[in-house]
Length: 210
Image (cartoon, rainbow, N blue to C red; front, side, top):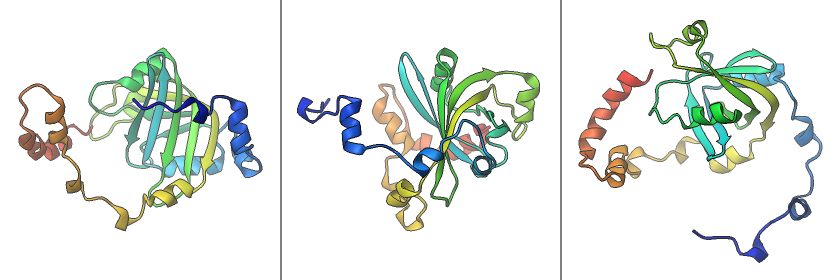
Protein backbone atom coordinates (compact mmCIF):
# COMPACT_ATOMS: atom_id res chain seq x y z
CA UNK A 1 0.00 0.00 0.00
CA UNK A 2 1.40 3.37 -1.05
CA UNK A 3 1.08 6.12 1.56
CA UNK A 4 1.25 9.86 1.04
CA UNK A 5 4.52 11.34 2.24
CA UNK A 6 3.96 13.40 5.41
CA UNK A 7 5.26 16.59 3.80
CA UNK A 8 2.75 16.21 0.95
CA UNK A 9 -0.27 15.22 3.02
CA UNK A 10 -3.12 17.60 3.79
CA UNK A 11 -3.51 16.88 7.48
CA UNK A 12 -5.73 19.68 8.78
CA UNK A 13 -8.85 21.62 7.84
CA UNK A 14 -6.76 24.79 7.96
CA UNK A 15 -4.42 23.40 5.26
CA UNK A 16 -7.39 22.34 3.17
CA UNK A 17 -9.05 25.76 3.39
CA UNK A 18 -5.78 27.49 2.55
CA UNK A 19 -5.64 25.52 -0.72
CA UNK A 20 -9.30 25.55 -1.72
CA UNK A 21 -10.77 28.58 -0.02
CA UNK A 22 -14.50 28.60 0.72
CA UNK A 23 -17.66 27.87 -1.23
CA UNK A 24 -19.84 30.87 -2.00
CA UNK A 25 -22.82 32.00 -4.02
CA UNK A 26 -24.80 29.26 -5.71
CA UNK A 27 -22.53 26.55 -4.36
CA UNK A 28 -23.85 27.38 -0.90
CA UNK A 29 -27.40 28.44 -1.75
CA UNK A 30 -28.16 25.18 -3.57
CA UNK A 31 -27.99 23.13 -0.35
CA UNK A 32 -31.31 22.92 1.47
CA UNK A 33 -32.79 20.64 4.14
CA UNK A 34 -35.77 19.39 2.13
CA UNK A 35 -36.81 18.24 -1.33
CA UNK A 36 -37.96 21.26 -3.32
CA UNK A 37 -40.20 20.98 -6.38
CA UNK A 38 -37.16 21.37 -8.65
CA UNK A 39 -35.21 18.68 -6.83
CA UNK A 40 -38.22 16.38 -6.85
CA UNK A 41 -38.33 16.63 -10.65
CA UNK A 42 -34.73 15.35 -10.82
CA UNK A 43 -35.44 12.43 -8.48
CA UNK A 44 -38.57 11.35 -10.32
CA UNK A 45 -36.75 11.48 -13.69
CA UNK A 46 -33.89 9.30 -12.46
CA UNK A 47 -33.73 5.53 -13.00
CA UNK A 48 -30.34 5.14 -11.29
CA UNK A 49 -28.55 6.20 -8.11
CA UNK A 50 -25.47 5.36 -6.10
CA UNK A 51 -26.24 4.59 -2.45
CA UNK A 52 -23.49 5.17 0.11
CA UNK A 53 -23.66 3.96 3.71
CA UNK A 54 -21.35 3.80 6.71
CA UNK A 55 -20.86 1.78 9.89
CA UNK A 56 -18.03 0.83 12.26
CA UNK A 57 -16.71 -1.70 9.75
CA UNK A 58 -16.29 1.02 7.12
CA UNK A 59 -18.12 2.49 4.15
CA UNK A 60 -20.01 0.98 1.25
CA UNK A 61 -21.31 2.31 -2.08
CA UNK A 62 -23.68 0.36 -4.29
CA UNK A 63 -25.68 0.97 -7.50
CA UNK A 64 -29.46 1.02 -7.40
CA UNK A 65 -31.78 1.16 -10.39
CA UNK A 66 -35.33 0.69 -11.64
CA UNK A 67 -37.53 2.24 -14.33
CA UNK A 68 -38.06 5.92 -13.64
CA UNK A 69 -41.32 6.55 -11.82
CA UNK A 70 -41.04 3.18 -10.06
CA UNK A 71 -37.61 3.73 -8.53
CA UNK A 72 -37.16 6.21 -5.70
CA UNK A 73 -40.47 7.42 -4.30
CA UNK A 74 -40.73 10.95 -2.94
CA UNK A 75 -43.17 10.65 -0.05
CA UNK A 76 -42.88 14.25 1.12
CA UNK A 77 -40.24 16.98 1.25
CA UNK A 78 -38.36 15.16 4.02
CA UNK A 79 -38.77 11.50 3.03
CA UNK A 80 -37.90 9.22 0.12
CA UNK A 81 -38.34 5.46 -0.20
CA UNK A 82 -36.39 2.96 -2.28
CA UNK A 83 -37.04 -0.79 -2.69
CA UNK A 84 -34.24 -3.31 -2.24
CA UNK A 85 -34.44 -5.47 -5.34
CA UNK A 86 -33.01 -8.95 -5.85
CA UNK A 87 -29.20 -9.01 -5.72
CA UNK A 88 -26.25 -11.05 -4.53
CA UNK A 89 -27.52 -11.29 -0.93
CA UNK A 90 -24.36 -9.73 0.57
CA UNK A 91 -26.62 -7.00 2.10
CA UNK A 92 -23.57 -4.84 2.93
CA UNK A 93 -25.60 -1.64 2.65
CA UNK A 94 -28.50 -3.03 4.65
CA UNK A 95 -26.18 -4.11 7.45
CA UNK A 96 -24.79 -0.58 7.59
CA UNK A 97 -28.27 0.94 7.68
CA UNK A 98 -29.32 -1.31 10.57
CA UNK A 99 -26.14 -0.47 12.50
CA UNK A 100 -25.77 3.22 11.73
CA UNK A 101 -28.35 4.69 9.35
CA UNK A 102 -26.29 7.47 7.77
CA UNK A 103 -26.74 7.30 4.00
CA UNK A 104 -26.25 9.34 0.85
CA UNK A 105 -27.86 9.03 -2.57
CA UNK A 106 -26.40 10.37 -5.81
CA UNK A 107 -28.99 10.44 -8.61
CA UNK A 108 -28.15 10.36 -12.32
CA UNK A 109 -30.54 11.15 -15.17
CA UNK A 110 -29.53 9.73 -18.58
CA UNK A 111 -28.29 12.48 -20.87
CA UNK A 112 -28.34 15.14 -18.14
CA UNK A 113 -25.08 16.60 -16.83
CA UNK A 114 -26.22 17.64 -13.38
CA UNK A 115 -26.51 15.11 -10.57
CA UNK A 116 -28.46 15.35 -7.32
CA UNK A 117 -27.38 14.37 -3.81
CA UNK A 118 -29.44 13.51 -0.78
CA UNK A 119 -27.82 13.02 2.62
CA UNK A 120 -29.81 11.70 5.55
CA UNK A 121 -30.55 8.82 7.87
CA UNK A 122 -32.23 5.63 6.75
CA UNK A 123 -34.19 2.80 8.28
CA UNK A 124 -35.60 -0.41 6.78
CA UNK A 125 -39.28 -1.33 6.60
CA UNK A 126 -40.95 -4.67 5.89
CA UNK A 127 -44.51 -3.30 6.08
CA UNK A 128 -46.52 -5.70 3.85
CA UNK A 129 -48.59 -2.94 2.26
CA UNK A 130 -45.50 -0.89 1.53
CA UNK A 131 -43.70 -3.88 0.01
CA UNK A 132 -46.74 -4.58 -2.18
CA UNK A 133 -46.74 -0.98 -3.45
CA UNK A 134 -43.27 -1.57 -4.96
CA UNK A 135 -44.17 -4.82 -6.78
CA UNK A 136 -42.37 -5.41 -10.08
CA UNK A 137 -43.08 -8.28 -12.47
CA UNK A 138 -45.07 -10.03 -9.75
CA UNK A 139 -42.15 -9.90 -7.29
CA UNK A 140 -41.94 -7.94 -4.04
CA UNK A 141 -38.78 -6.40 -2.61
CA UNK A 142 -37.77 -7.91 0.73
CA UNK A 143 -37.36 -4.52 2.36
CA UNK A 144 -37.83 -0.81 1.71
CA UNK A 145 -35.27 1.83 2.61
CA UNK A 146 -36.94 4.86 4.16
CA UNK A 147 -34.51 7.78 4.00
CA UNK A 148 -35.16 10.81 6.18
CA UNK A 149 -33.73 13.80 4.34
CA UNK A 150 -31.25 16.12 6.03
CA UNK A 151 -29.49 17.79 3.09
CA UNK A 152 -30.22 18.02 -0.63
CA UNK A 153 -28.24 19.73 -3.38
CA UNK A 154 -27.36 19.39 -7.04
CA UNK A 155 -23.89 19.06 -8.55
CA UNK A 156 -22.89 20.95 -11.70
CA UNK A 157 -22.06 19.26 -15.01
CA UNK A 158 -18.25 19.35 -14.84
CA UNK A 159 -17.65 15.74 -13.75
CA UNK A 160 -19.96 14.22 -16.36
CA UNK A 161 -18.63 16.50 -19.10
CA UNK A 162 -15.01 15.64 -18.26
CA UNK A 163 -15.80 11.92 -18.14
CA UNK A 164 -17.89 12.00 -21.35
CA UNK A 165 -20.25 9.63 -19.57
CA UNK A 166 -23.20 10.16 -21.88
CA UNK A 167 -21.18 10.37 -25.13
CA UNK A 168 -21.89 7.37 -27.34
CA UNK A 169 -18.42 7.58 -28.91
CA UNK A 170 -16.82 7.18 -25.47
CA UNK A 171 -18.61 3.91 -24.72
CA UNK A 172 -16.34 0.95 -24.03
CA UNK A 173 -17.22 -2.35 -25.74
CA UNK A 174 -18.01 -4.99 -23.11
CA UNK A 175 -15.69 -7.36 -24.95
CA UNK A 176 -12.74 -5.08 -24.11
CA UNK A 177 -12.94 -6.05 -20.43
CA UNK A 178 -12.78 -9.37 -18.55
CA UNK A 179 -16.10 -11.17 -18.38
CA UNK A 180 -17.88 -11.82 -15.10
CA UNK A 181 -17.08 -15.50 -15.41
CA UNK A 182 -13.40 -14.82 -15.98
CA UNK A 183 -13.21 -12.60 -12.92
CA UNK A 184 -14.95 -15.15 -10.70
CA UNK A 185 -12.68 -17.93 -11.97
CA UNK A 186 -9.56 -15.86 -11.20
CA UNK A 187 -10.76 -15.10 -7.67
CA UNK A 188 -12.11 -18.48 -6.57
CA UNK A 189 -10.17 -21.55 -5.47
CA UNK A 190 -12.95 -23.89 -6.57
CA UNK A 191 -13.39 -25.46 -9.96
CA UNK A 192 -15.36 -22.97 -12.04
CA UNK A 193 -16.44 -22.99 -15.68
CA UNK A 194 -16.19 -19.33 -16.70
CA UNK A 195 -17.40 -19.89 -20.25
CA UNK A 196 -20.53 -21.73 -19.11
CA UNK A 197 -21.28 -19.04 -16.52
CA UNK A 198 -21.01 -16.26 -19.10
CA UNK A 199 -23.08 -18.24 -21.59
CA UNK A 200 -25.91 -18.83 -19.11
CA UNK A 201 -25.85 -15.44 -17.37
CA UNK A 202 -28.27 -13.52 -19.67
CA UNK A 203 -30.94 -16.18 -19.10
CA UNK A 204 -30.18 -16.25 -15.37
CA UNK A 205 -30.48 -12.47 -15.10
CA UNK A 206 -33.79 -12.44 -16.96
CA UNK A 207 -35.19 -14.90 -14.42
CA UNK A 208 -33.79 -13.26 -11.30
CA UNK A 209 -33.72 -9.52 -12.05
CA UNK A 210 -36.74 -9.07 -9.76
